[in-house]
Image 1 (cartoon, rainbow, N blue to C red):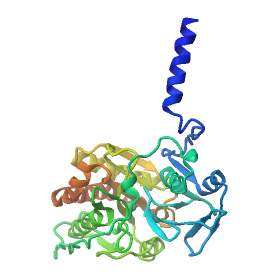
Image 2 (image 1 turned 90 degrees about the vertical axis):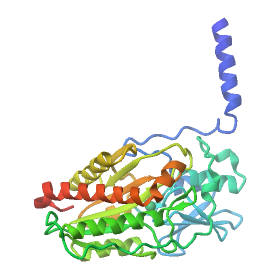
Image 3 (image 1 turned 180 degrees about the horizontal axis):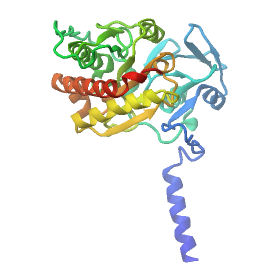
Length: 344
Ligand SMILES: [Zn+2]
């Protein structure tokens, strides 16, 4: 009797503390998906009692309320538009097999709160709302490639590599602590270019300044140049938890070589920094640059801009060079071991 009273009190206290989220069923965790804090657009529409459709643009999807509200997502970008005003999402919207989109759960929560549908917000509630505000972006001082004019080694001779600095131009990528992704990934990519060229590799860049080639263009650049390796450089955002830090490397789950390449990059970054190693991971999101490229490919997330300390570190030239050097070492390791079998 006494025990059941105590239990009752504990349950009552717990329920009082969670009253805003208690009706929300826990999200099923997909074992193939290490990041369950996502939601399909179809599911979001169904929860809201709204509809969705493809368009207006080729990469757009529109969520519509019965009252004429429109929320537009674009595949491969972290922007969404709510009735014409733009907001930034935690991460990119991703097309997931067919005509459904994978969205960050935080995006769904934001839309619910925006339209006063607080009862639909899923647990855990995200606090860092400031991350979603689209702030004006300062023009970054785009560093020019510090290209060595003469090769100083031949360790990468015979390799053609495509280096993709994520985002750029009108797409700042993730933003946290006043730092935007496009600004910190470019100098790392340019330094990596210089290192690879100095080692006699042929390097193809998807961008060398503050411009935005779209995701299909990036894949086309890599595919048409018949490169052996493709590396895309990004940084992460975790609005739900600003304490998260570390680097990680994604690869196409159907690519054995991609897994080896991602593993070599993660191992080299692990050697070079004290930042937590979140590992080489199968891409759970169908990232376009990993799906549409035809060669061994990896997508590197250098660290978390949502963590104040890591954001500051990522802006430091020394650290950017350290990361570029680590990626270079990973490329050398992979190329030296696997040059005979570079393929997707
Ligand atoms: Zn990115």
